[in-house]
Image (cartoon, rainbow, N blue to C red; front, side, top):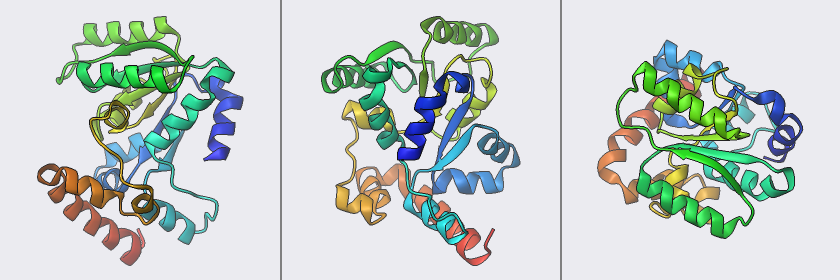
Length: 229
């Protein structure tokens, strides 16, 4: 992750209006099956591997330096460096309750962190007028980073639709807001290191995640390791 942090520190002002996808097995499989979403994943500044299976597959295909970089880990490291760089942060997505708990925790754990603004959009498509107002609020806050927590694939589609319109580097972090709010606990470090974080999350939310993991994990294994697609 060090190379990414260095790159962001050196180029953050030139990256305004672009976006980073934090990609996992699920979004990779969706990209394989959906050409429009694949274009979204490929159309941003970069897509980084949130998950050891993607990082391992990348190394197997000739990219030895690739390492797993999760959304929460990236957020944490950027927050740690923010005071020194004077970076400003905007949070878009999730719920009011989650955001309030997250902001309170961030202010406690990262003194001096500049939170330029927050926004909780409704769980429906915005009208053009509502969308224009949301963009205006973000740009008026002059953030360096716009953290987008709408869940995949919605957050990636939102970032692509606002590429060049939002004056900040957009990063889709999925459940990152839930982790920092304390609503969802991260797996123990040993499980993260052994590619078992998915199992820990499955144990926390089996009803929602079982079908998704069963389907996408099998498809990823079939396409990436057997068909070599």
